[in-house]
Amino acid sequence: MNYRTDLAIERREILTEDQNQSSEIEGVTMQKINYGDGVAATRIKITNPAGAARMEKPMGDYITIEAEGILEEADLVKANVEQAVAEELKQLITFHYHLKVLLVGLGNGKVTPDSLGPAVASKVRITRHLFIIFEADGDDEMSSVSCIVPGVTATTGMETADIVKKAVEIAKPEVVLVIDSLAARNIERVSTTIQITDTGISPGAGMGNTRVGINEESVGAKVVAIGVPTVIDATTIIRDALAENLESAEKIENYIEKFDEQMIVTSTDIDMIIKEFSDIIAGGINKTLHPGIYS
Image (cartoon, rainbow, N blue to C red; front, side, top):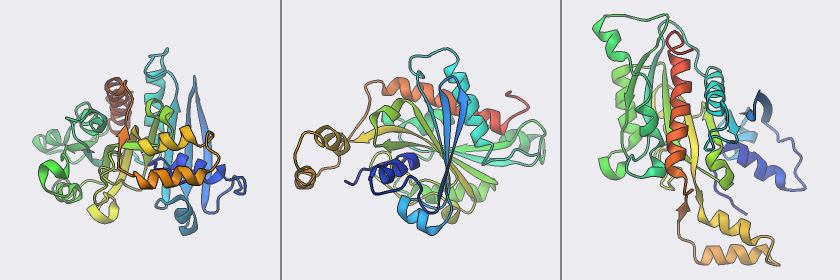
């Protein structure tokens, strides 16, 4: 069955669910990191074209951070996840005196499941104007951070990748840090998971409206993307619910194909999910980009 997901960890799970498929996949390595208190990270690296073809994702690093109890505000869980985000983000973005970063908050702030990017952007410390005012070429405590929230093509009439490319020409960042909503296969991951990758992102992927990709090739700078699954494809729920209750999986596929209409669903807690995860991600970004201010 063809399950839709933006998460590398779920793509790997789908491949290894086949009884005939070894847990090892050519061109794909995996490492697990335990941060304690129920917070863990899985680092997946796609190392060659064969692995990219099997995973249906570009070569590069994919880090998945998972934690239970975020919405329940379990003791210190948000702080622990925030620290995990910072530590994993530092694997992809190294702070130095001259570091310049362009933050891009993708999504539509008026559509709650798609508002993660704008929410995070509003909570990250923006500093590029300070460097301009004081004519500073660098700093030991903070990075030069600029930010755009480009909206969506339906409201701007422009490809988001083109807007980001123009912003890169202005800010001349070393890294473009993109935040966006994602789609998951497993509904439980909507309130437990953060993915970080250095392969870029396709705007609108989580909302089922994929646009031109934002990556190093399209915008002219290294792209690191952070995403949280906020939606799940309705057909995925149908497949999972019926798979064990029908004699033939083929009947499920034929039914879905016959009545195939793109529909996505989200959690009733989506407002809280956006609030809590935007706090966590913004905190992790601030610790990574401004280590002298946030510790």
